[in-house]
Image (cartoon, rainbow, N blue to C red; front, side, top):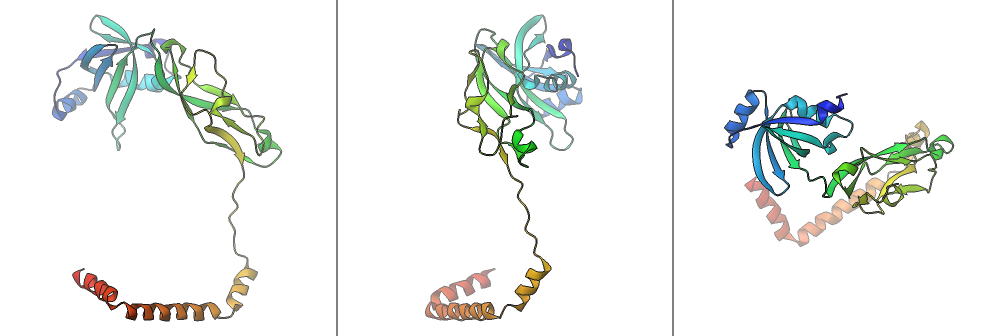
Length: 241
């Protein structure tokens, strides 16, 4: 895992704005095109080292990491707010960087980590299902948590954990609906397999369903005769095809 020093700085170089060809030239030089905006300043187009970006994204705090963006002699706090990978080769194509004012609150998404073995799994044969894996919250940059942990050891059938049950202090304000379910105990759906006896019984059943099916076809045929226009319309469509 990357060290704190490695993820706390991202070096950027000014680049000339341009079209897709200009972006390709940046990537050919081993860099990734990026834009920087926010904090009441204008947008800047820069290039960054993809290895530094990946170290940040793969760190413990991930894209919520606050780091120093070094552009020439200037340094300012920033974070990664959007990134794009090439779908086939998986190469980093572009990132968006947001300047951070440490005294202003941000809206971020934080992962939810389940802790403990549920009682419903140990004693009731159920399985733990996590329905919500991250929560949106508002806080100051310095207060962004790496994750929100929740103890699920008490969960049994009929008991669940919702957003309102997640522990947090006054520094965090949850924006996700408080009634959203996070996790609960559910059962394994068993696949019904037909037994040889059931197959034999089905084969021995009188052919009454076939008579009913035939009668239905005859009724449909009569209905078709009663509506020749509809039938002709179908014929015309077939001829057109």
